[in-house]
Image (tube, rainbow, N blue to C red):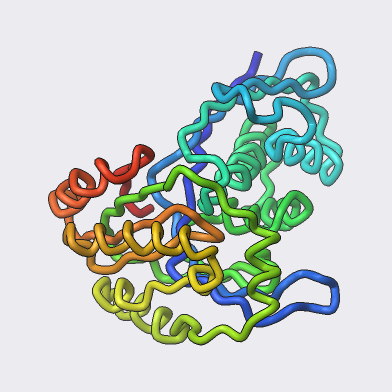
Length: 286
């Protein structure tokens, strides 16, 4: 029974900008993304038979064909004609759910990468990313990982020079955020500020971690409901007080992260933030 274990890293938004609503109903995005060492773990096992079964350590997650990991396997089979028999997917979640860190999309990307290797399909990362477009907008980035610019709906991905090696503290408050609601709020008002994406790209090109940290920015913070915005700001200030070079929210939230130049500094920041937020993690950029 061939099997493979594959990791699914969380992603952070170093910048997130929304440029406007498109004729197709989606929004035009411009984002600088970064993967980190907080990961889910998936075990893929092929056995005789047909179909897909999925099990997970979180009972509230769908364990059927609604799960993005299972959808990704089906899309790969449709695109390539590959026959993997019956696929067992065992998913151990560590990346918080509904947190703005693309946990589900990363799981889907991990299935694409893992099956590509397990079945000897020899598809390029770019070919896998194209298949991933049919699963979700963040999946192409999650297939490629690292530091990248994502445009369009998020599916147009351009790899960038890697973020200088650093550490991050991640804190997910105990509430969820409705992505459709945030887009509605964003559509109904004029944003006061946008990220300096060009400056972020220049800082990455120069390997300037301080310059990167100064330009962290997410337009969705402005349209959060007031109490949730205050909570995000509280966590950002705690990160900065704890020694972070910069702090921001990832995706549509509510996870807040800070960038630190050393593990020791990040550990101090972690110890300061942990009492404020149960779901707090220490990770390294990838």
